[in-house]
Length: 178
Image 1: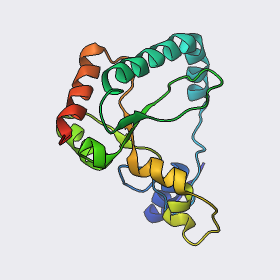
Image 2: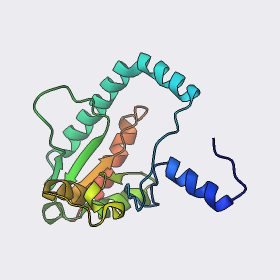
Image 3: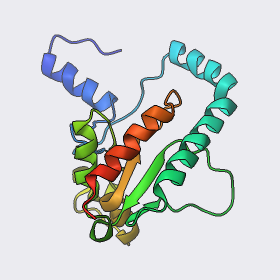
Image 4: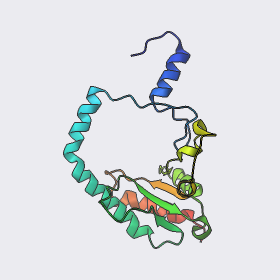
């Protein structure tokens, strides 16, 4: 616990305790932060969620398949590459947009969806591109930079129905110029 009468100090500590995430549509950090916010109540809720984990994973897989059936034939749209081994949980559905083929870039699509009150986000900004790590030694980076430039995380909450997914798909289709 932190107690102080210094409001600036309290705000700074709260910022650090919440991952020091800067306000941006993607995860961006100018300072190193932490994620030390698990309480006993949150731990208990987490244990309870384990009881429905298998059903949630099946639902996430269904949502991914729905998006894939609807969008995989669109020129300039592909799905995030994945390893051919294992069993993906489909926690998040990510598409990659090639603007020269699709007719719009990732940010144009994201903003078009936002205009319809549909939240989509860029994939996570690579660590070496974060301001907090400016000047740090880094090797490679071309793949993750490409994924960040073209990747869009689609809404994929387990409560979404076909009508919700169709609305997202329509927003994506309507945003292109081909």
